[in-house]
Amino acid sequence: MQRARLGMRSALVNHGVRVLIIAGCLGHLSFASAAACEHLTGLTIPYTEVSSAISVAAGAFSPATAQDQGGSVASFTVPAFCRVLAVAKPTSDSEIHIEVWLPVAEAWNGRFLGTGNGGYASALSYKQMADALQKGYATAGSDTGHSGGDLRFGVGHPEKINDWAYRAVHVMTDVAHLVIRSYYGRLVAHSYFWGCSTGGHQALTEAQRYPDDYDGIISGAAANNRIRQVTGFLWNWRVLHEHDGDSLPASKLPLVHNAVIAACDALDGVKDGIIGDPRRCKFDPATLVCKGGDGADCLTEPQVAEVKSIYDGAHNPRTGKRIYSGWERGSEFLDNSPIGSWAGYFVGKDEPARLEFWRSWVFHDPAWDLRSFDFDKDLAFADHALPQIDSMDSNLTQFKQRHGRLLMYCGWADPVVPPEEGIGYYESVERATPGTPDFFRLFMVPGMGHCGGGPGPNTFDPLGTLDRWVSDGTPPDKIIASHLTDGKVDRTRPLCPWPQVARFKGSGNSDDAAQYVCKEE
Image: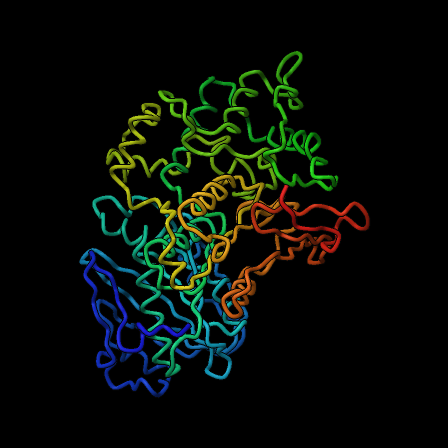
């Protein structure tokens, strides 16, 4: 839909104050005529300076310095485009760096894609932006208002925490719309946002806080239950260090994972190395207990207890109520990458992941003792101290009323964000927002890890699916996903809208999506 708010005004939000951006603010640039790339530095936007606007030739392009990329410079093949750099300062303590990439006018599809970030890092999703350019999208990203991935950027800077938590993506979106309108001389036909992990969190924040920013939103592996996620990391670390000298080592994760697959692979009717729905898997790690002394092919009794506690998830010791979903059976080990197993965040670690969240953001004490954490009182304190960190509002009525579309996906073998969190959020929206399936669809991906990877079909096109949904109004009844080995497709499978699941018809090639049907169980 056309965004009328960008015709005569847009808004940047500064502590609830709406700052109008009217046509007269755009200086010598006419609303009716497109501007040359280099002229975009003449744009006047409240709290924002357009510091650079440079035409980039088609071909290999490296957008970042080695320092930005932690020592390596990524290069992407891109079509010719206009690269715009801007710095927004919506508060006195904000400094949000924004990039807007604009394909040449004849290549633009009339659409805009906002991109998300990962973890607490400032790195832009350059590959995603380059892919969007190739498809004809104008696209944008931001550093969320800080540099690097160390959480100490928020020490003494509450507004920088707010920029990271919710404001930066919204400001990026408004700035991008104005730059796009000025460059092409017309409004965006459809605006989309796509992010995974922290980007999935940002996606849901946009739907909840700023329902008129985007026509369609894609949220993958959303870490939107943020305070409880870092509580889950802390819980797992404490469990693993309860028995000094007998913590589950990373070397035993493949042992546990292979035993889970052997026990539960065939539960979905197909033996293919993939667990269709891990909640049906009742694998008991006690089956791996050592008969004699400790060994590489077994678990000690304390290690069995540790694995069970990770599966069960964090619980309030006073009430017994679950605090955060447990990690699924089948997520223990997918590969040796940093986010391909439990070793990425808690197994074999000297300290729990995101310890600085507690020391720098919650307790403001660099010497805070992680073993002192009270999973009842301290969690309640964190909820009170940082309510803006989570994005759990399940009433999406405004987003629905503006004809927004939300596509969410989660990997069933995710070792970072437990997939049941995605199901829990979707079902909470169903309870709070009538007609949820008309505008919000959740797709669970068997055998996929965190935002991708794993033995299951994990290559699919959520952006194309969303664009078709927004354009023709028909909700997706399935998405075809592929698995690639050495760049070649060796397996396809339909992803089904929750609560439907893909069931094998019983004959034919079980690696062919055509042999499956989506149905509720």
